[in-house]
Length: 414
Image (cartoon, rainbow, N blue to C red; front, side, top):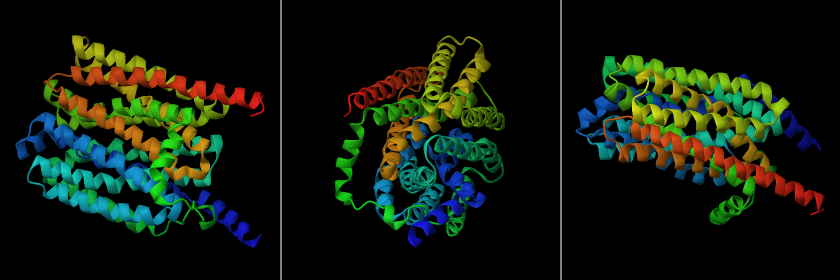
């Protein structure tokens, strides 16, 4: 009884800690920090390394490959050994990969070190979500997920703006030096973060069974639905990340500094919708808000495609459609992740890894498609985002059908 009480006291202390909230927000923001900071530098990086725009866009895709595979590794490890140690190892890899990116002399080398950087950075993202599930349940978990996303959105809000200033002052390589410092600083901050997964709650599964566990989880229709809704949406999001520097700066001749402001507007939209989501989830439910977010993404994606294909409205028509799409993040991501985690809370690490890997795996396809079909115009960007939005909306049917099937089972006494 004393051990149980100490565990409960420990959880309550961690829940109330603003320091914990700050660290979890920072860890969750590593994916954005690692990419958004260098977005304004992508055209200049291509010139410096003698690479085409499509090749430079693959630095985003390469990062997403490492990010997806890394999550599948860290999730089960953390379920068995706890959260803190895997995060610490990941931060070391992140700092090493960032340093390699800054020293790269070719696009191929840069992409390779982006893979290393991503594998390390993925530990913080996947395990911060699992830590939230360790500490909170149900709709309260959705609220906290929205709060964390809102707080960590400050990083991508400032990322392109800060990155543009670093680029102007010290060049693009200095951007990766800053990421090394961020990784080391987060590692030091981690020393003050308590372990959120007590030994008594850790799984005894062998890591060799990991693949079979993932297959088992994918057999759950609602988990698959949540993962697909978020996955399609992320395909459009990372098409936006990879494509807008060239669509705005190269095609529409937007200055790098102004690009940062346009990008920041989308992050403000994400913060607003996350705040709205946290306030409304108790009233309308997580699945309902998830569906509404997918509808918004589909409509915005189609509008972006029309603007890109026809040139209707010029820069601002495209920018407004993309702003609406990215703003839907606040309704789609927190609800899809929390919904999946609530299905199997005892395997929060593995579920978080699986959902995250599918999300960023679709991001690989989205950003890679923009690079593959790049022709100097915004149409590949608009096309990919339209497909992504429609796919996200259609995937909500899996969530709903899985819920209906569960109700039938309960009614039948199964």
